[in-house]
Image 1 (tube, one colour):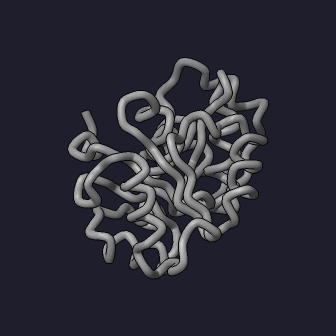
Image 2: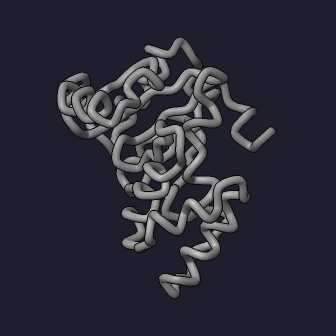
Length: 172
């Protein structure tokens, strides 16, 4: 059980979402590390098969002489996978929907999300709440029962304006 279990739906900004779709966790690690401009030899990751994710994150942090919290990095890596099938999920992005769908399909993760709301689906973009309110409506969930994962000030403002809980992934 995590703190997000109290919500009925999860909504992700596309660029701030960490996706874990490969049988191994390398793809998710690449995405998390790229966000923070951290480097790591993927071949060394095999040495950590079966170990808790935070142990690998700790080595990555040490190797990069970074101040990131290894537990937060590990949690971020698994956020989407943990809730797939347990809670409806949507993407609310400032990109055009066709572009978002194409990117999510290319990454092999489009099926994880029940809805994608793009810039062309709304009149009022972030920091206005319309993107996230439309996500909630498409998921059939009250806005106050949603949590939004965001990595930008406008998105955080939009989620709050929608009456939703928000996780600023920059603070993880």
